[in-house]
Image (cartoon, rainbow, N blue to C red; front, side, top):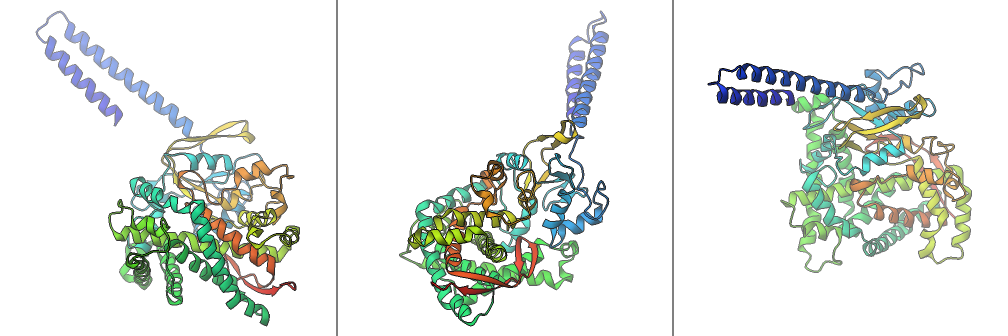
Length: 526
């Protein structure tokens, strides 16, 4: 296009010159034409030379993803890549491939299958990144954006863009207005609600189970508990049990269809009842959210000011209540299951290992008031280590790059590599959090690694970003951490948990131990 424009400009220039000197007979016309043709050829050669140089530069892409089942130096084929990236063990597939990368090489790999992004052109290249320095550069770039694949989440909100999927002004005004609702003052208020809900659940569910020596599906219990906490703390709404069940069940139906939709379902939705069922689930979700919205509007004297629901309702830049409802729903999606499964993973690992930090924590809190339990370092180490080993956002985040990202392969004599601008990079948190470049014994649950005595602490902190970072980091991370610390500080202080069934690990939207069953045992002094 540039060359065509350049030639057009030269053509216009030549025409003007010819017209102006057409009445001259001293050979000026011929000389001028020769000059213009020569200049055109020279400029074309310069352009192609620069283009070739750039092409040579960007040909040095990271190598393809290594095959998990093949030879050490073989690349994953098309079928293996598609099946591995789309299965319930996608996190493990990526990690097992990254582990085969020779020492010293950055954990960055190119997929040999293009990624089709909804409402966007086919991406010619896509990359998996599990190197902390490169991931941080990508996430901190203000010109990067959410790729079109996030539009799948809009299907559960009846096609409305959300804080999670939108770019540009739609995202900016939502984020700006909601962010203030997560100030320290409001986190304290929400934490009180968390404590109240936890106490009710302990009295009415956990203690009776402990008395009988019975087990519980801890994931399901935590899903209901966090749903209770979020609905009241964030949206000033007492959600009935029936609505909680409907919300959890319909979210699963809608997300499974729209997020992992088979291509034929997109082409011929009328042939597949799953599509119709998912659309009905989405409609049911929006009805529940509108109940929350209508409840707040009907309340002449809301309990608090400047809450999340008030910031959404009173934001004049929303075009409709449909957009407001969409953001409320996506905050449920982003808040309740991530926190729930983080709690479940921590309880599972502590039950497996009984780390020394657990007993140190219990010794320390014996001398502290209950409100200070959640500030004890050993509690933080256990939570942090669990979130490293089992990040619920295991697949990380995707970004369409706003610039070329260049880095060096030190193991290959300093070869310069690049992920080009406008291509898609997926940050694999699961792999980065187990990258031996940053973590010793990366597959082991070792809370002690987070003490200042560990020589790699600075490198580990650099790589530990479970809530992402930059302008698109998790807006609710302060509330999530407050919930985790409040719930786990009490449960780990007062109960031992024994594993009845570890269930199975699945990566679907979030990383979860499906079917995990724990038996609570109340400690003697309690």
